[in-house]
Length: 336
Image 1 (cartoon, rainbow, N blue to C red):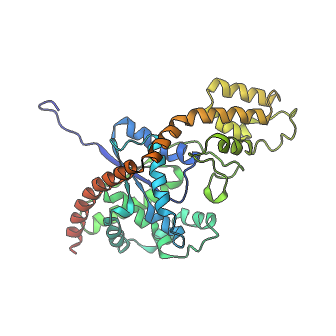
Image 2 (cartoon, helix red, strand yellow):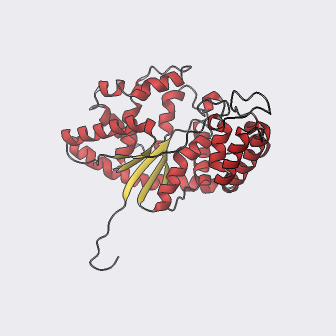
Image 3 (tube, one colour):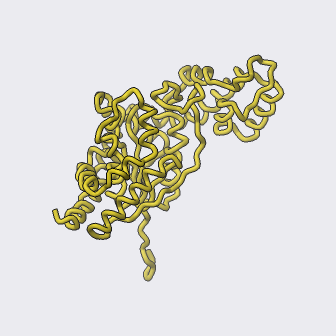
């Protein structure tokens, strides 16, 4: 930095994912691509973590796969373009201070704030087959708040559906600062507008629905899933005109095919100039082409697991340094 110039620290952002299974294209085009873009802009100090303790809120009775899913998730992140040289990648359970801050924040969080959380009922409906009548499930937004404010994050990259969680984190941070002293910045949501990719059956893409196209899918596995995708329900025969605006396959073409090609496909669909089978075959080729760099990186990291473990260990060490500093301030403020 030149003499007389001020060094401006980058604002920190933080986000995480629960390791509940393989990541799919909805995850890639939702959170992951946005994380990579924020990283590559260079405007932020990026922290991304595997929320393995959060996985226990719904999978507390079946923990056998969480460690494997954690490793696979980091592999998918690296394959998608996250760079450990520019982002800190870590695992939540490796930083025990998260549990301590969660405990302290739970002491000051009114129960009514948790009960009014709109996603609480939505998740209970989506995971109706599991017993979620636990304190951990009701209180997970407090753990989420601890995750965020532990690193004094200024921003949280989220979609619109996650706004209630960020708002609750903001309220908890304000309450702590009011009761004790000003320690935590009040984080802002960094809203992301990303395409909603549906599963092959037209429902929300989800592991629980078994309708996902995974980041790891390639070759015959990828082609078979695309061939099984639902299309315009009113197009029953090859000669019937279609409605691309209502077709899930065309939604994917808008992402993976060049704009001119997607336009031609839409016109051909409306005039029955192309059938659904051929349309799906073209899509399979486009997705395979677009995902090749991702698959190549994935193959590299799967072949070098020690490199992935080192990246996680380095990220945990960086995160732990900040967490220790934060908790020293918190303990002094709470006088405990």
